[in-house]
Image (cartoon, rainbow, N blue to C red; front, side, top):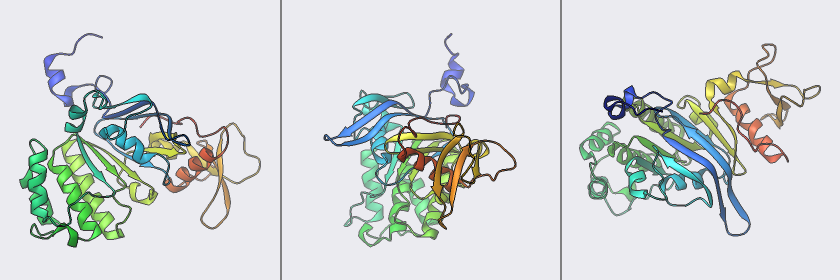
Length: 307
């Protein structure tokens, strides 16, 4: 491939998608803790720049481990990860400079005020935009003088998000930030995230086990079950390529898995665009692939277009 012109290299807007590296990439990543816990098994993930992807799976599926590999907190036993082409195993500072990170446990200091956290962020992160963070906190009604230990769970998560947004990082990693929030706080968190990511053309990966939260916010879906990627696709494409069938005469070649709906009724998720069958909800799609991950011999590969 010939070298790109200087204008193409300098301006990501002009760089063709097939030339630009994925915002986040994992290639054949495996990670084990101790002798018995295999957290990740040959995981392949590719998240294009400028998208919001949902990383969905039950607790213990390997979501946090994968995110921690991108941040550089963990190193894969096999395979490699990249952040905008940078490997945190060899250049952690370069990878972290491209990242904004929010975890389920916000890591706030209870005795410090909101303003103190912005000052601290400015000393730890070059180019931190404290003015923007203050503006967003003011819009959210979070006083700068309030101590972190007195913030509600929603306010603490919003403070962590505002700090991450203040870094102006092109890639945001959000590890289960919604888990302990009430519905209103989740809604406000997602509204802020989506607005800023779309405005900046940034990329975000949102980890959650609450499927309904990610449906309206995300473009792409990565389902992790048992440490394996069982589905990776744009959400609209994935829903369009699957249907719900009744148990019985289902062609095994297109069956993903049988799962129980909330009322206990059994259903089969199938790879099909048959207009006579019902299109699954996003929750049904995820449940089908998580059920496949628990079945021997299934769930070891991704289905559908890459996210």
